[in-house]
Amino acid sequence: PDLRTPEQCERAGGQADRRGVLGAVRASPDVERQVALLHEDAALGFTRIYLHNVNRDHRPFFEKLVPRLVENFRMQGPA
Image (cartoon, rainbow, N blue to C red; front, side):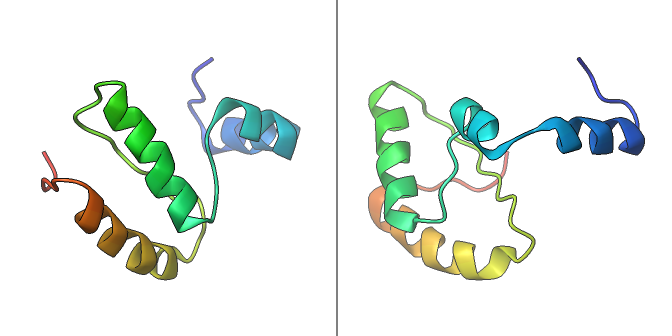
């Protein structure tokens, strides 16, 4: 269901457990794992991939990830 208010998001988030979340989305702090997963996506024919980092401190992760993405993929700026 759509969550329309911050309160609804809080309630829904409180019901989520780690195993359930990781069963539904791919999540890993490992940059090499992320690169491998993105290669799998590209092999399936995806030409555009959007990344979302749920960590509150985005900079360190993306400082490691972006150079590896540039090495491995043809990069295109935001649409």
